[in-house]
Amino acid sequence: MTELLDPKNDYVFKRIFGSEENKDVLLAFLNQTFKNAGETLLTEIVLLNPYMDKNTPRDKQSILDIHAKTDKGKLINVEMQLFNQYDLEKRTLFYWGKQYSGQLLEGERYSQLKKCVAINIVNFNMLANDQYHNVFHLREDHTDISLTDDIEIHFMEISKLKDNNIKMNDGLVRWLLFLKGITKSSWEALMMHELEPALKKAMSVLEFLSQDEQARQQYEARQKFLRDEASMIEGAREEGLKKGLEEGIQKGIEEGIKEGEAESRRKIAINMLTLGLDQETIIKATGLTLSELEDLKKEKE
Image (cartoon, rainbow, N blue to C red; front, side):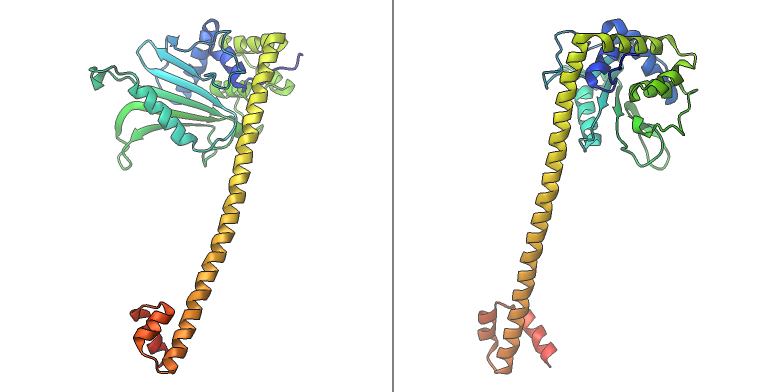
């Protein structure tokens, strides 16, 4: 079998899920997502930013997430995150807010706003539980009453799919196992089950892309950019830690000096009190306040 490309690479991901000819693949994946979350299944979607050949992964500004709209007007954004860039929760809310507010033109009513769903597929552990699929809504803390159903955010952590917890009878697990990265063993594990036609098609598209020289070149270009980006993130993180450590040490030294100076002033003031100097002279000489000097007098007594 030809060495398969990594479907987590966002260029490959969008080729498989974000093109018009593979719209049925995206629909099937979304329906497994919503089925797993107990949501209503979709019957039709429209791609709002379909992949086209002119989209080049060499352009770091390329938009490689997927925007879709259902026949009911619900907006869905699907994004693959290979590296933990931190603040993903806030980033997700920010882009969800832009998508939600961007629906209205000037003069249109708020009642025309449709539900927006954000689906994040991440290649790292993010939430403090064992669930690979977490879904968030806006609900009241004590009664679980929904304020609105317009916000729905999914996090799928494929890193939580371990060999000892994979349930192959779960349709969404099979899709995420495919996305996790095809090895010979995982490919055979998938093929042992009766797969839905759309997942078989996704696997066929991946095989085709893996054998296509131009697609592999595009893939390698995107991989290089992603590796460079990851290195920059890690480098910035290490530099931040180093700077924080240096600043912490410097702050400690400065605080130590300040504490030393304060203790010196106290000793000088005590000596001056012993010599019988007046309060005004002591305060001017040491910089202590009248209250601090009174406290020293009590300690001295």
